[in-house]
Image (cartoon, rainbow, N blue to C red; front, side, top):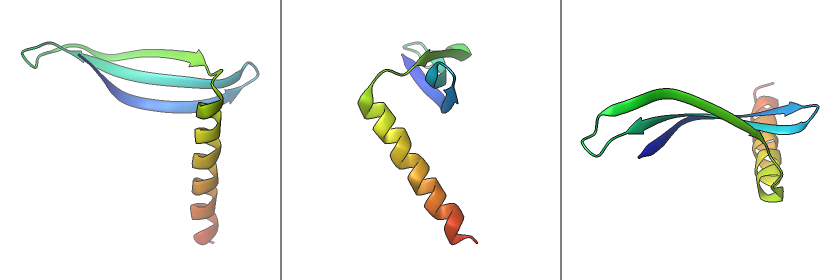
Amino acid sequence: MKKVTGISFVRTSEGLRVAYAYSEIDESGNVTASNERGSYINLDDATKAFVAALEESVLKRIQQGE
């Protein structure tokens, strides 16, 4: 099984890049691969909307701290 261990979103000149890390675990619970990484340019509108809402939430939290 693959287990996602990290996700990040970065705006680049190509578009919204989704970077991720994951580990692979076998049926006995042994980690067979750790800290594997990949990324792609997002083309999905739902993901774009999710990131925009997440950024809005973070900005509200930042403004509350001022």
